Image (cartoon, rainbow, N blue to C red; front, side, top):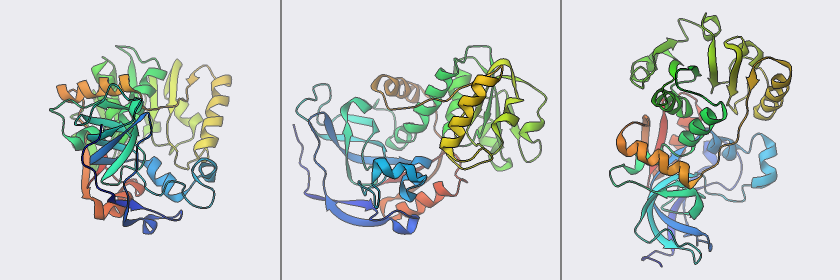
Length: 328
């Protein structure tokens, strides 16, 4: 089934790797969905640090999968919320007119193709911007807490609690009955304190490594301290959950993963790495929480499509509070 769809659309594309200056608004053909895909009229797209890495083509190992000399898919963005306007021949559980959210290929556009298995029907009461803001970061927070085997009554430290993953992890953990300590900067203490944490630590006044408490789980979304130093905050038998692709004391994302796996072998604490991918069932769980108001993505800013480069720059600055959203 197909609704009326134009031949071309506006999209934010890049022809070469680099900074935000490589992003440009262009008229491009509307993509066609494959047999297991849906075509979505985009209502909102949310940006992530992963989009910045792909824009820059760094670390360079990414180029093996996404294009050696230039991006194989020039339109950036993956998190999406919108309306299905066409379905592939093998898609039987979604229909034209369904409002959905999830993962798409190139969501910084008026239309985007999404694998049907990586989207879910969006509850009617949930705004598109809210839904898009909960996709990659909400799933990463959910999957991280699941990998750590967080249980009710346990203590959790979230470093980077004002970031996209961090602020959703605080809410998910609190809803599970954990006692959460959230770490952020002075300017974010107010709204982070409303997310359900038992304690909010302003790291400019109380450095995280100086905390005298030991936690069952430490969820580090910043990577600004060496893993071995952060392990001192984990009680014996507890879990360290490093989750940052930014360069830091332990190197870049890949080196940090390798070091984490080594530390897991030589310490009395679990050091857990995990892979988060979009899944229909988990998206439906997030959607139900969004509809109930028990999960509330914090929107840093909303930008029109013709200012998507500015939005990407905001994410790249690492100063965004919560999520940055683009609306066509």
